[in-house]
Length: 425
Image 1: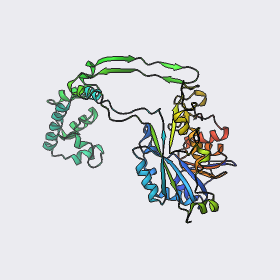
Image 2: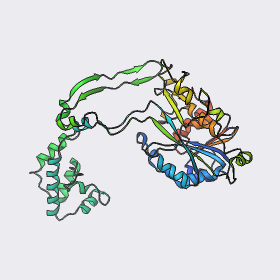
Image 3: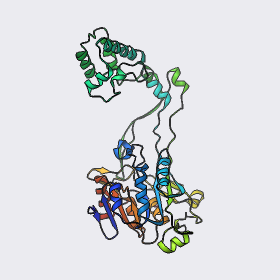
Image 4: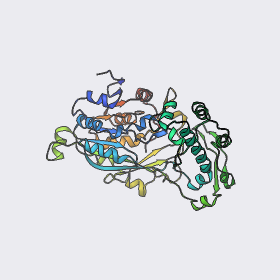
């Protein structure tokens, strides 16, 4: 077993793949597993968020092994990929107990404005098909095949060259460099088609004519703001009306909704007893600490958790975190600041984590499923919020993180109890 990356009296952090580290942990040694695994949606283009590890039955089988009988697993997921993680967890042997939902207001829609996209589209289809038809005829006349073209360019079987000679929807024109290489290899005379190809190259990256004809309704110029609390770029936003008839038909249509919730899987390991009571008495696990997890109005904790996006340094009038009515009485509410003050930004060696969770939320989850002084495991530690939450709740913690820059962030936060990225309510 390799030495821990970090260790103190209450927290241990391992650097490495969870599939390698988990087998080194003892059977039935963990009281609760609370984790925020990759959502498998390619967050910010990061490779770690598209490996499929969250769907790994062997991973969750190892988690089941190290968990005490009756111990709970809480795992975040993305709305569109959560189901695959849940199936893997169930296939590993866990019993799914519930789905919690963290509801928030700071999500940003990332869909496509269909009317805008239609006006923006450049209609080169007819000209592109002329070029691909010419290339197909030239290829055949030279006695070449697409397979041979793929070999020439080092493409895999079924590679890019098939798009240069098709009349299908994926028809494309080679780049200038690729074209010159084709002309040279196939000994082509491209004088007849060359002007059209040059025109298509020149138009590459430009928008359709209709886009420039859209009527501007409103415009907001971008500005850089530095209030001392935070820095931000407000952006340059333009609202405009559709110009083409095709676009007008789809005015107001988009491809996504604004994200406003993250599902959280709640699962339990079997106890081997007829009742959970026996497991609680034997292992200290199996129950949910409902008394310590109530909303401000008391009563039974719900499976709905609310996140409130506060402006930097203050709450606006009617802030539900501070109010005593309706939602705040019925549901746990966790304050967060989407624009983090520079003094509280968790960054080490120029690296920050893109998807941290509110510390208050993670503390609530720790309280819900962890017995007093228990041991919490997070096999996807990230910036270490789960570990800090466990320590703040009087528990001990073990973390596993594969990406060393994130492990350095966790270490710094554990060493200094780094100011929270998020305030608690």
